Structure formats: structure tokens, C-alpha cells
Image (cartoon, rainbow, N blue to C red; front, side, top):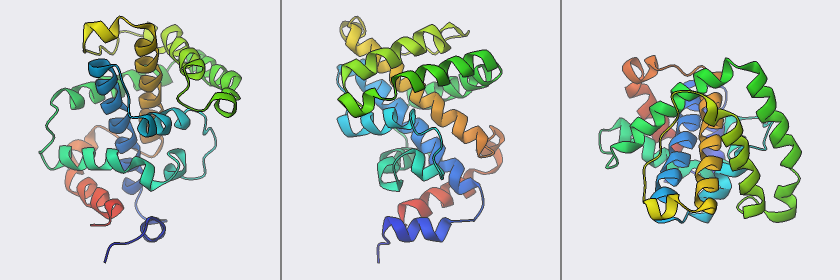
Length: 217
């Protein structure tokens, strides 16, 4: 019998932190898959885009799942993570992009001044989510600008490849940058939950089991 989201969440409550860590990694991959889609096609999946953007304004979420608005919201990312851990991910670029973001996160959190600037910048525009919604250009544009003025200045930069036709459009560039910031949010969350690159070497099987538990398998 397939378990409900609430039943899965209840069964995982209070267990090993790896269950939280795989959620954060799923959020990271889910965001970066949208970065890839936007850069290639100029269009995002509106629901997944909204999930990513909303994570930026959940400053004091009670649980890791709450950062994403619930387990169901990060299910596409869990499926991507499962494919990667099982060796069946079709997109070879996505893991490399994820590694670049994890490296960017390390440089970002070491710069306390930049962390404060990003937090303050997000707090200043948080009210726009109520005015416009999480995918409106009037919210996406300042988030993209915030990324450009802060994390984009760190070296080496995260390089996103795609269709030059779309990457030459201001709206598309703003979306890519905004979702990259959301990806960094997930990377920070992963570290806060005890994530380490060693997980990929020594915790792969446990991570896969945790993903399957979240997916109700």
C-alpha cells in the first residue's frame, strides 16, 4: 500500500539526519534541473519554479520539508537524486553543475558580510511574494539582481550553458540567477543538516534508502 506524505514524514521524524540531508540535496537538484530547462528552452515549470523561489523566503522553517512546502513539492528532486544515486541519471551536466554550486556555497558562507547582504536583500523584497506571487518577473528580477551583486562576484563562477538565444534575454537571465540562488539555499541547508562530500563516497547506499523512504518505496 502506498503511504501518504504525512505517514512518510511521521515515520522519518527523529531518525538519522541523512533523511533531512537527502531532502536538501533533492531541492538542490530540482532547482538546478530548472536552471538547465530555463537556459535551454527559455521557459520554466511554473510549479517547480515557485517551489524553488519560495524556499528563499522561508527563513525560519521548522523542518527541512517545510523549507520546500512539504515532501510532495520536492518529489521531482527526489526522483532525480534517486536516478543519480542508482547510476541512471540521463543528464551528465546536472551533477557537475551541482558540484559547482556546492563549492560556491563553501565560499559564500565563509563571507559573513555577503551572507548578511543576501539575507537583508531577501527580507527587503519578501513582501513581493504576497503582492505578485513567487514566479512574477517583478519578484524574480530583484532576486536575480541580488545574486548578480553578491554570489556572482565569487570565483570561480558557476557557469550555466544553454541556448544563446534565450540566455541573451534579460528575463531568462534573471530567472537563471534567481533559481541559482535557490540552489545555493538548498546547498546551505544540506551543510546545516550535516552534509559533506564524504556522503557521496561512504553514504551512497544509505542515501538511496533514505530517498526511497521519502518516496514511499
